Image (tube, rainbow, N blue to C red; front, top):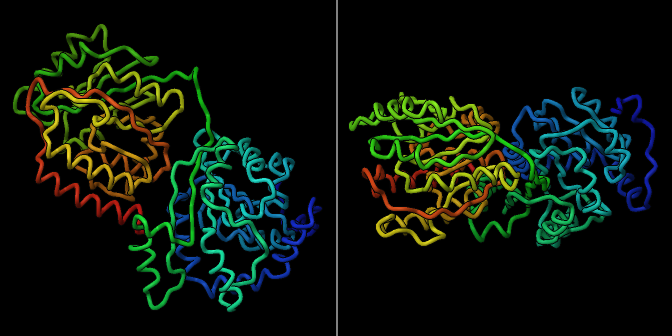
Amino acid sequence: MYLRPSDSARSLELPTQRKRDLVEHFEANGDELQSWREFNAAYHEDDLKFMRFLVPPGKRVLELGCGRGDLLAALEPSYGVGIDFGAKTIAKANELHPHLYFVLGDVEDPATLASIEGPFDYIVIADTIGMFEDIDATLRLVHQLCAPSTRIIISYYSHLWEPVLKAAEALKLRATQPTINYIATADFLNLMDLADFEVISQEQRQLLPRHWLGLGPFINRFIAPLPGIRKLCLRTYLVGRPVRQFPDRKFSASILIPCRNERGNIENAIRRMPRFGTSQEILFVEGNSSDGTFAECERVRDAYKDSWDIKVLKQDGKGKGDAVRKGFAAATGDVLLILDADLTMPPEALPKFHAVIETGKAEFVNGTRLIYPMEDEAMRPLNFIANRIFAYLFSYLVNTRLTDTLCGTKVLLRKDYEVLARERSYFGNFDPFGDFDLIFGAAKQNLKIIETPIHYKARTFGETQISRFRDGWLLLKMVWFAYRKLKAI
């Protein structure tokens, strides 16, 4: 039931005086509030830019408390629905954005949400959650409009800024606001947990919400996101997903094995491969070796053709990243898994990675070699120290604790990888390793990332393809690249 302008002129019966006061305030001051938005343009531009980063165009988007629909329209949804309890506000939204759908209703009313056609890719609650009277109950109602892949985005003012915002109102630097609940982030996390939503990422923005001859945008882009400093920012953004478990879900698997000069490990990879998933395919992607690895891959494929579905591909370009992209493009399984051909990550551990995806515990699984003790000489001391440093940096960049970003084993659903590949232009072809293209893409998609520990083994054949100093310099450049793409937005 979507209300067009002719229908939305009627008023809405609201259950509490507080809500009636809120409607009266926004209906009476709508034009003035729009003027204040123009006065504080730098603040609103930064907020809108980050919301567009969180919500890619072309998605199905629902906004709870949409006002005049400007944010919803700016997100460029393929199907956009906004709900608001102000009749004049909804009429104005329909006038300004006739290509979107607007509903006159109370977002805390089950009947209002029941009238909406879901599910949605994104559900946005921007600066209105402090007006809810029962936050966790309302969030529970939202589940009926969610698919497992739905992301809920909540943006709000930091409670630390309440005195500053009140002072800005007194000094006529900000529109007078109705009384709302300034809620601490820790309380929001608890409320989302009560409502069976899991927070995937948390970001803070805007240290100086004014332009000030370009100083404000510079500080907000490069200084405000830094560790420690970001806790002082005005804006907080939470991204969550509905908690769903699928104990009986079954997926097929595609195991990608990039290999270059690994001839002695090819047959062992098949011999040691466990059976898991509804079906399996194994894809060797060979990187122009000098030791006959490609011929060995073909020999193993033919020798095991009666018991394994094996494909052999040859790289067109160079590097593991190129091999991963070629192999995943050819894969047909529901779950995509990477197994390095050096077999330092035991193939026998792959089923537990697959199970994490299959049961819905996460949507992207990264292996970590740094939890359990590793065999002697499995990792050189300098590599170990560098791994720890880069793990800290990349954990900050993707808002997820990662202990070993360079572990080659990474697992995700093929449907999520296909979205990542379509939206790869945001980052470009920047990653010769193949690890960070996936990690950053997963973070940009707001996928739930989790680490799974492995027992890391020493090599039994061949030599490492990694150069500590050359590749270390590449990793430092990648940190700066990721900072600009994921933080300094």
